[in-house]
Length: 247
Image 1 (cartoon, rainbow, N blue to C red):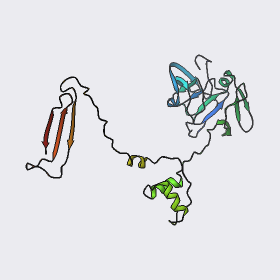
Image 2: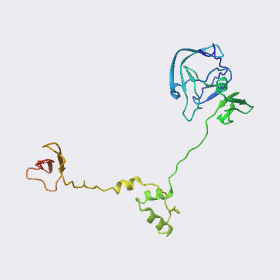
Image 3: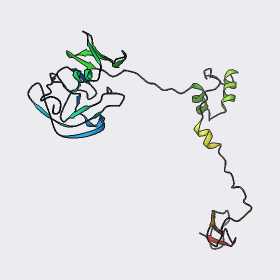
Image 4: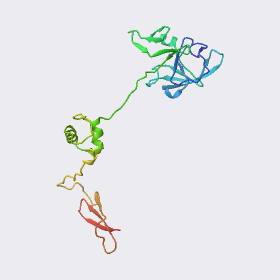
């Protein structure tokens, strides 16, 4: 690889398609390399970089950056190689970052100076050491109280718990006393319109500086000419009022 060694030989080859989240540990690769630019942060363009693979083929280095997203190993100085189908973690670069890399027959682990596991969840597959992302299943749920509060027309939760505990309604399971959750629909429905506070002084200094407008309608009884809306305009300074009837 240019700027590091004349060649960065890659020993791994595979005939099967690769997951772009899969990373393989490679002792023959001088730098971390990836085939997808979108996951790299702080990307820097490189114009003349080349990489040589184990089979003699060459690839173009388009730039380098950092990986910070959750479903990828957090690495720095990762080179983007156009057309690469397998992401590779360089053992030599891990060692350059003061990490201790240990291989066993079941996996590989990289530890920092304090002994903390920096790159974990590795396993042995396809005769290669492969990084594997954490398989954590995150779930969400709605409490039974909130669920039945919605089913029964957004009834008051205290009243709902009382009638359930008294077995007034059959078929509803026992509900918790409260969940602390705020019902968005109830909050919006209970909002009321509040008038502006009265002001005892005129804040404007000239005519037409501020004009208050309001449109009322449709009125229950239209005028003889069929007009059912009334527009009112009031000048704040002079209190002069215009009133127009509209269809």
